[in-house]
Length: 170
Image (tube, rainbow, N blue to C red):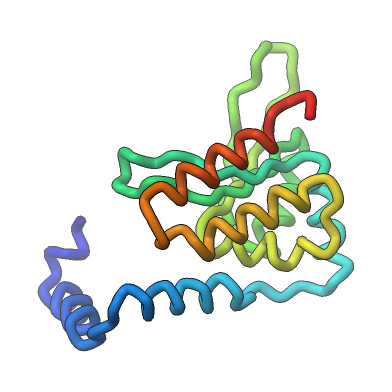
């Protein structure tokens, strides 16, 4: 909110929006191109290692965010008791590491690494060839990111499909 108080910033954003008269089809095409473009580069061995961690300790989800004005967002999370591992992931691909509450006092502290949006797309696209357990979830998440602007119901359909894939016992 503070940024909008700066006149130059507001003017620059307004000019860029007004100067680019794009219809909805062009915006969909642009988001598709963004989803396909991979911006994060690591050696294949490190992507394979990250994919193994994601398969074992991670989750891929499409979450409802009606409070923020968006219908649904993509999120990739990895939880572990070793903060050093998650800091390594953060240093290689970005995202955020934070600590979570443990259920019982005698449990070791839990740390979470999380990323969302286009960074999550980059992580999933790079890790996809190496994923085994979470491959179907990653494919669904990438499909969601490409088609999320097609209709209002789209995000709800993908969110429900992801919920089914993430159910325990499957």
